[in-house]
Structure formats: structure tokens, C-alpha cells
Image 1 (spheres, helix red, strand yellow):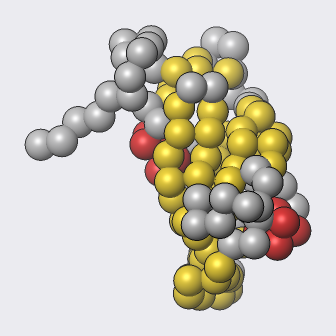
Image 2 (spheres, one colour):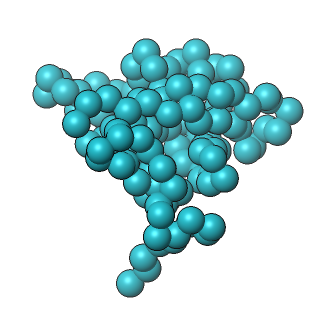
Length: 126
């Protein structure tokens, strides 16, 4: 399908005195979590909540800081999640994508608001 990147705004809802950051995030529907580089976690003054074990693409495992909360904004949608601190660019996984009710349009490789729920994020709770 190819790569998809979007501009998202990340903020620290626990400390509103810290300015939010607009970042270009790689959209990865094969990843679960929001992942951010260390410099983003530092700029947002995010507290480390714990260490989490992450399995990397090559099968190796390592412990990484898990920080939060993080407010993620895309267009008129937002969610609150934790983030793994790793990598050299922000990565938007399916937890924040689903929470904001966003979809990847396969023909254009763009992340968009779910056209079935354009005004308010939808969810299924059964």
C-alpha cells in the first residue's frame, strides 16, 4: 500500500503549560501504540509511567519507557493515550486511530475521518 504520514498535534494534558507539538507521524495499521522519539517525550515533559517490553520487527525484544498521558489531535478529533518511547519519528498505531474513529483510504493512502461518522467519532461497545 505504501507509506502514509499525517500531521498530528501532541500535547501533555497533565501539564497545560507545556506547548503542544505538531509532528509528522507515520501511520502504521500494523502497529498498536503511539510511538514517539525521546526528544518529543522530553519536549512535552511526559512522565515515564513504566517500562514495557516491545518486540521489534527483527524479533528482538527490549524494554522501552512508556509515557503519558498524551493528547493526540487530528483534524477535529482527539484522544488520550500512552506512548512507547522509541524510534526516530512519531508512529501512529491503531489504538489512537480507532479511538479517533479514523480510517486509511486505500486508494489515496490518506488518513481520514470515518465517512460514516463525519461529525462525531463513533465506536462499537458490545
